[in-house]
Amino acid sequence: MAAAICLHPLASVLFTHESSDDVMPYAMSYYWLSLRSKLEEIPRLRHCIATIARIEGYSDVFIADFELSVHEAFVNALSHGNRGNASLPVTMTLEAGVAGDERFLEVSIRDCGEGFEPVRALRSICSGWSEKASGGRGLFLVSQFAESFRIEKVVGGCVVVLRYIPY
Image (cartoon, rainbow, N blue to C red; front, side, top):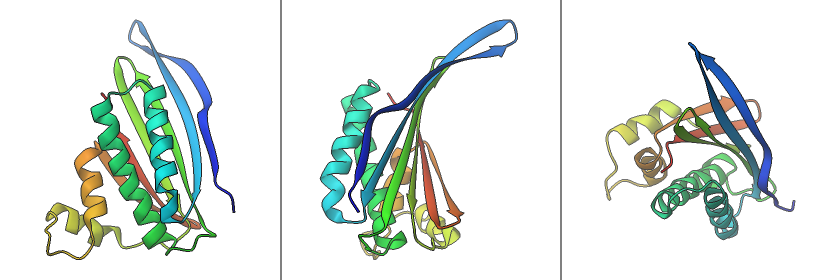
């Protein structure tokens, strides 16, 4: 399977939301990315993520943190979800927008695996990571950079949804 990449927004939309007497515009851009479950895809992933972040006008400091956390979530998806099976994709959707004057960025990372026990993973995150721990750094790092995240079991895979307040 060849990797598919869409660096230009799938859609850029300007909406209006009526709140009291004010009409507040908000804009959203959507991006889609599909990569093979191979560590060799990491440079391509990081390049795409950085390019999207630059298109959206985010700061270099935010981009560095964003790249690292998405990198870690990708490695989790290919290692734990797809168990290194290169024939299974890891797909991502990115939704960037502004609601009123607040920016947001939401990234959904989907694998084709059976998922894992979210409660156990969240317990290890909440208790903090130590160098003695075997593994577990990925979600811990994600929790340090993303404003919030959630893990969803879906038909045919698992989805990790990361939400950021970019700067």
